[in-house]
Length: 401
Image (cartoon, rainbow, N blue to C red):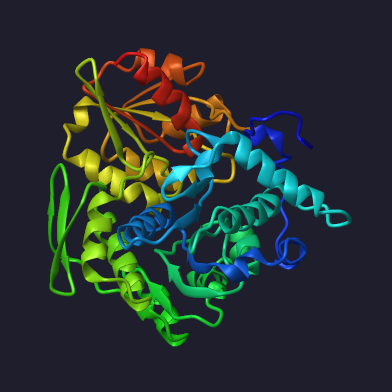
């Protein structure tokens, strides 16, 4: 095996290398006998909520009896969760084998980690006998490696906000143009949770704007209406009915039966997105929010708690809008414990502390996530700011269940 062992982790690849463009991935797929062209592809882009839409689409297709592969990123709790077949992650040995097959076909191409994983996902889903593939964009859309794929049934574009402006552009319209790049020879559905400028842009390129959910009721589950039908989802936060509505519109566009759509929405469940675990009388809320728009759902959820009894454990990567995130978070939590994310791209705990001190009444610093959770003494503890925080946090909590 070319990366020295049967179990892959994020550290097996050089994550510092980033390349835009679809040429290398397309060349890999061609050398693998074009597995993408043998699949029916649902391609998902957007700034926030892509993983949720992928989960909804996957569960809808499974409810319709369709064998489905799903490729998402980044991994939250385990590397192989990025590659699922019928909602179940492939084994480490299988992922290892499929990646090794791609590497064997890569002579002269020098693919990046993400290009390798993208090609491996399509190859794996074809070899595993999938009919459908639900594919999440990595960054942007137009020049993202996943956009090398052919045979798209539908493109879904979720909510768009200013993000990765150094790569995608410094206006909403420029970012929309990047996201809309996935619309190639297929219909497109756009989440209605958009700015006016974004919605105007997507209408101009002929995309369907999904109907906004109505009669929404929040609780342990979320109930809402779309197209005159009532749906229930286990996924929490005010954005989830909008995410579900986009998936519902896309499922109708590709001819999925209404009963399967309703069943799939009810069965969708995604860890790391307002994931609630209760242990020792404490409610832990794990969420991978990492930009201001992504903080809106989790902050809305936390507002239903007692803000004086909420502690945030926060860390972030160095390229994120920390001030924009903290402005939202500080409206729902008075206490924050600052940590350094377990990532080479992480902002130091000292820098996180300096930023948090501008917004929170009580700020302390901890040497790692476990130490932060040891220090958290309130009834609700929210771990947020980066997906990279969640694995260690969940492990710490589960040991105390």
